[in-house]
Amino acid sequence: MSKYIDADRMKRQLENSTYRAKNKFIELINEQDPADVVEVVRCEDCKYHENEMPGMVYCPAVVGGWVDADWFCKGGERRDD
Image (tube, one colour):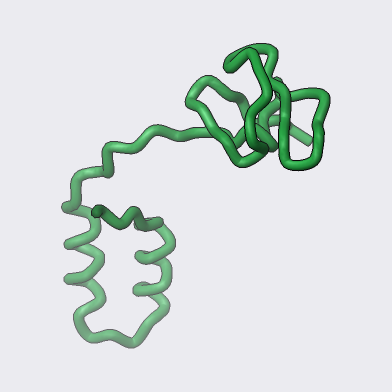
């Protein structure tokens, strides 16, 4: 299974390090293809959910029913609060 990393964070950590080979590490990170991932929003963080019950949220927009609060979908939108 692939492990997804925050490449920018890793480069910042390397730049602040004393590793002799840090420039090579940064070069290798920059050469990597981006991971094939899709951003998702957990229902508990979505602007569409409403009528919470303990551990559950109702999604009127995307799912159209009750789901676990930690469920997610690619159609959700993170709320701004």
